[in-house]
Amino acid sequence: MIKIEELTKYYDNVCAVDKISFEIKKGEILGLLGPNGAGKTTTLRILTCYMQPTSGNVSFENFNIYDNSLEIKKMVGYLPESAPIYPDMLVYDYLNFVADVRGVEKTGKEKQIKELADLCGINEVMHKPVIELSKGYKQRVGLAHAMMNNPEILVLDEPTSGLDPNQIIDIRNIIREIGKKRTVIFSTHILSEAEATCDRIIIINKGKIVADGSTEQLKEKNSSDYLIHISLLNAEFNDIKKSLNDISEIKDVVLKSTKDKIVDFNILCKTKNDIRSEIYKKIKNTDSIILEFHTESRTLETIFRELTRES
Image 1: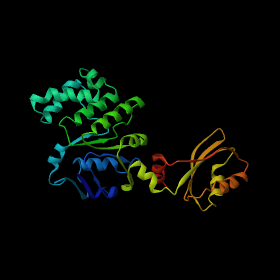
Image 2 (image 1 turned 30 degrees about the horizontal axis):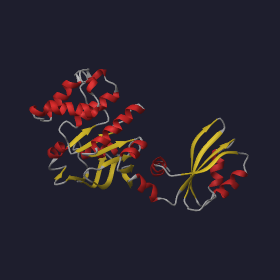
Image 3 (image 1 turned 180 degrees about the vertical axis):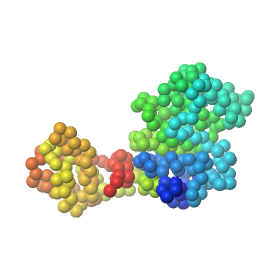
Image 4 (image 1 turned 60 degrees about the horizontal axis):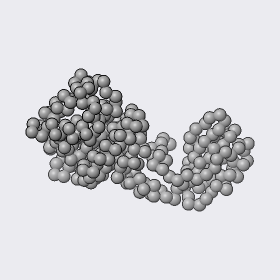
């Protein structure tokens, strides 16, 4: 349904998006993941025709972003990270205003507003000023705004940013419900959100796609790798890391935390073989005390860190 081809965007001499290409199927819930500055928001702004790329193209069936931007905007509902809502208006008045702007027929306007209020869970705040709402409710009103004209495609930029855990679960459930009838594309920093909500995940780093697939596919892609978690008492991490680097099957040693003379770190092994005995021998030669020593299954978080952390 949506085809992105060699999409590139420069801000002066800085490349924000670097020749990325992928397709999005109709009815898919796609999550864009990546660290700050990876190019997620720029990609979404180009997809929604709020920004033109330096080069490349995006096509929605028979429409492209250069010649058919107005037609595409009619197909797409867009919620930026900060919902652009007029703070002094009542929620009902605001949605009524949005319905008029989006060309919703008067005969069906009340029904559309009521259905969106039910879906987004905002019935109890419909007669409150927007300025009095919590961020969670503002995001819900923003979702109702984005869906006012029944778009085929919904694009959400960090929809759960700054929300508390209960609000995050509420927005997640709404996205799942929306995804039953529409194509949904959203960016997020919350890896558990992507894992719980998305049919497919694309990880972007420094403007390039570094992973693309379902959570299961991403985990299986490097199935020969595995993690070992170690917790040591009275250890110097840099000394331990230096000694472990002598083991050729070790890909990386990553510090997780240090507290009260306890050092927690992960070892990424680039082999199917069990090398714990070799690691144990190295640690045994130090004055450290082993508190934890076990293998860990790969998670979306570990995959994300491997693909996006600086060298």
